[in-house]
Amino acid sequence: MKNLLYINGKWTGEALDKMEVTNPSTGEVLTEVPMGGKKEAEEAADAAHKAFQSWSKKTAGERSELLYRWYELIKENQEEIATVMTKEQGKPYKEALGEVGYANGFIQWYAEEAKRIYGDTIPASHPDKRILVQKQPVGVIAAITPWNFPAAMITRKVGPALAAGCTAVIKPAEQTPLTALLLADLAEQAGIPAGVINVVVGDPKEIGRAWLDDKRVRKLTFTGSTPVGKYLMEGSAKTMKKVSLELGGHAPFIVMDDADVDQAVEGAIQSKFRNAGQTCVCSNRIYVQEGIADEFAQKFAAATANLKVGDGFDEDTVIGPLIDENAMSKVEKHVEDAKEKGAEVLSGGTKVEGGTTFYTPTVISGATSDMLCMNEETFGPLAPIAIFKEAEEAIEEANDTDFGLAAYVFTKDLSRALRISEALDYGIVGVNDGLPSTPQAPFGGMKESGLGREGGYYGIEEYLEIKYTSLKI
Ligand code: ADP
Image 1: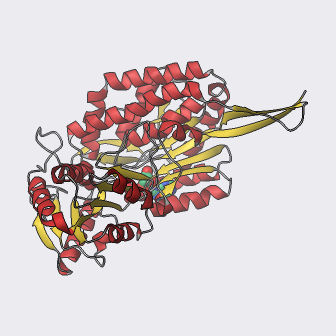
Image 2: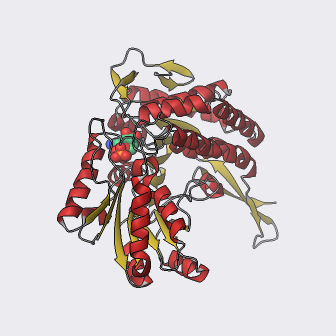
Image 3: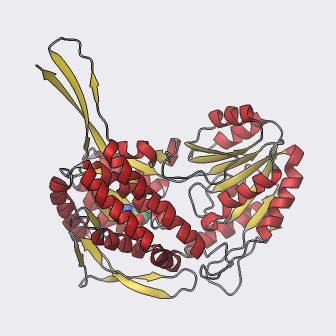
């Protein structure tokens, strides 16, 4: 297991203070990693700045080939990456393996997309002039990533950045540095030159501040909580960095009377309980039209009761532990609050005794808009169900939030699906689909869920500047 910082092609930081990386499922200390700070962050930015001079001048084909080699190595080592991920993050091994494939999809996609960074020529207003538009890499980019997708949140940023010709300094979450370091190790093996990718693990405030203050860091890309995102955006203003933010969600899941109930149940299970409910696109609140409310609630609660909670390495585990005690307290608080305000628990509703941070997948009915879970992201395995009469009511409730990342609609009527989708103030809408995320599609939110898009050809634009050359001939 790589457990050092990766700066300028060197594994370093042995002499620094250490922080422990633990397995949330068992509490076992897996290893210790150095606590990088200001100095290491600056060294990483120096290295990335230097490497930018040559990386940005490589041909698209050369960058593409190196990215493709990295993709191949990730594929060859997917079991090892998934194992490290399950150990440090807790998600079931099968799900971890799924994440590695998804994460690698971004490297593959952008290995291809590197060759398609097109510009324009525009007819000029003067016979002697020519208008050329080129796209150029922004420069050094800083990526700050969360613990819930230890691999994908990195590749989704670094894939397009490298393809565009940028170099990267990366700070993974304190909880999950090992997956990030393993990816860096594979990048090194793939022949990605020193300084192009740097990983600094450690004190978030110090590292973040060093990069915010550094003029040479021209872009900040962040996935995490809304308050930290706002802080980083504010801090980026000083040096006018480009910013992409992928922040919190509060996803509504709307089931219309005419939906295929079994399909809706399956979609709700997928969107709600993946990663034990710890994803920003997880359904946070379910609105069911009254005609099928009972049937949906019964079937959903029954399906939920069958989801096995346990250690990620047990074959039949579907739901792993929550990341830590704070995460657990939030779920418990949301469940207690809902119960006090009159909700009925249809399934789950308790912590698993004798474990670390295991919580049973929970379905409650009778959810009302005054409950915490209907107003804040739970980030855990709680599914509150509310009933509505008309679509307008559900749309209004769904939009009545500062967030706008993902929403879901289940209906067999295509016109209704599109009407509702268009009325939802969300960046992503899954229509009869509980798992819309995929490398070639734009992922990102509206309102306080963030800025910019990741994935697809949209995702690479975030790492490019537009150069207009006016040429008089
Ligand atoms: P979560 O609640 O999911 O842990 P955070 O927004 O706290 O969300 O964390 C996401 C990422 O942001 C992590 O890598 C974390 O270390 C980093 N982070 C948290 N606070 C700061 C900060 N003040 N400056 C820079 N990075 C930060």
